[in-house]
Image 1 (spheres, rainbow, N blue to C red):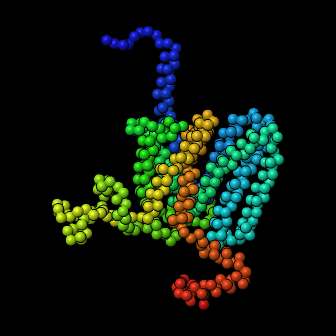
Image 2 (spheres, helix red, strand yellow):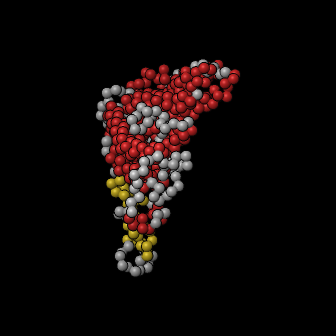
Image 3 (cartoon, rainbow, N blue to C red):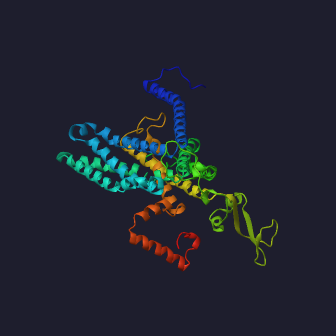
Amino acid sequence: MSNITDEPLTSEEEVAVLSVRQHDESRPRKITSRVLGGFSLFSVFTASIYMGHAVVCVMVALIEVLLFRELVRVRYSKFFAQIQDTIPLFRTTQWLWFTVAIFYTYGDFLSDVIQSNSKMHYLLPYVQYLPTISLFLYSGTLILTISTLQRDQLKFQINQLCWTILVILVTVGQLKGIMHNIFNGFIWYVLPCCLVFVNDIMAYVSGMLWGRKFIQRPLISFSPNKTWEGFIGAILFTMITAWYLSRFLAQFSWMTCPTNQFTLFPSELQCRMDPIFLPAQVRVPPQIFDLLPRWVVKLIPNVVHICKNSDNRLDPCVSGNAAQTLHHFELTLTNYYPIQMHALWLGLFASLVAPFGGFLASAFKRAYGLKDFASIIPGHGGVMDRMDCQFLMALCTWVHYNTFVKLASVSVPKLVYMYTMLTDQDKLEFFEAIAHLRQDGSSSAAEFPYVR
């Protein structure tokens, strides 16, 4: 017997039906807008890479300006009436603090690039004053900020100052090394960004397909849409992308070669290829396989089963030989690029740590009742909504590069510049020290061909 009746719907039921229909109609529109917005973002990202290092640096600087603007507006919009009527130069001091942070942070970067390029050494007399200029800017901004404090608004103004400092730490502080990443070789900028892109997309897709089907508990309590299935699925896809994308990018000198030139019309880069971008052969430590279930190890291609014979010899296992017992697994990677191992670490960080930058951004939005930080990108919200995971990733890449890739931070042009700064007595001691190294035999004569 049918349960369908001809009774008219109540007003509450009509509202519920209308809400469901609007949701069903808006979902395809939302997905379409999100896809088009993502395609536009990726197009801009790709185009900037082809336009060269200087253009990418300018784009990153513009993004930092937009990020700061979106974050400081969170509290500015909420307390606009109170700020407008009682606090003088509020926005001016905020932007002055941002300017000081940018000037101080990237002054070191400019100094490093100029020192490493002998053609730009004529700028060094001016660059050496950057720390002093930063100090005066900081001092002036501090004096102006303190001068604008109002007796009956002290607590509110200190809270706003703390928020400004936090925003600068989140944006400028974590992006301190991104300019270095760009000039160390585009791969150290492109690869981490792409890993975050993939992780973000696959977390969304995995969450839609398998969310709440295996684990009911949300990943983050204040963000119930984040699921464990999405988090775990994103890890898998990100690690696969890290392995193959790094190998692909390592084939192009435009990606791997560092540069020390500021030019709006880039030319082809040529350099001595770093060994991490060249094919190599490596034996995976057998202890790694001891950490994995045996059935997982057997799924890995080219793994060799090493067995122990009755006479205690170790040989490859022979199927059906009852006298052999499994001892360990061996795997030798051939035609492997060392950059792929670095990429796996970056992929792991992009999967396990970088998403928490996004969770922090979600906490900001929920604390102030916001859906998005802005509406500048259709389907994606503001710049902060897309960049929230990139901050930690850029910082990790910079630290990883300086710790495990480029152990020496001194180049020949830098040494030449440092030599010119020495006194005559120091120059004499410098050459005596080199001669002493040669006499001790700790360095070969070929290393110092010009020292007699």
